[in-house]
Amino acid sequence: MDMTEVRSFRLWFDRISDQALPVDASIDVIMQAWRGSVAPVWRKSSRSSSTSGQSDCVEVADLAGNIGLRDSKNLAAPHLLLAPTDWSAFAQRVKRGEFDLT
Image (tube, rainbow, N blue to C red; front, side):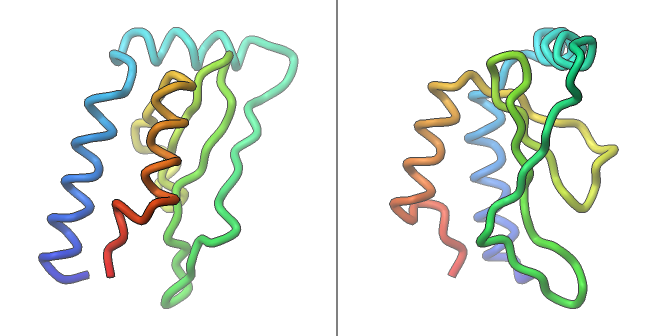
């Protein structure tokens, strides 16, 4: 990954992090979802790529009515939690190619 890609990813991450729920609220929602009878179902994009045996993708899950995001390569890392409207706005921007790294 070159520095242009790193800067682009960092900009994307900062933008989406600004839309995430506060940490305390995120933890509460995740704990509520896990207390339920069904564990969260994490899904990854059918367009996720694999280079050198590593999967390059983000996984998403419905967590008590919010959208959870996690790095599939580092499941122990903190997760982002977005309101459905923020997730929808982000997904539309992705579809329009606003975050393309190439």
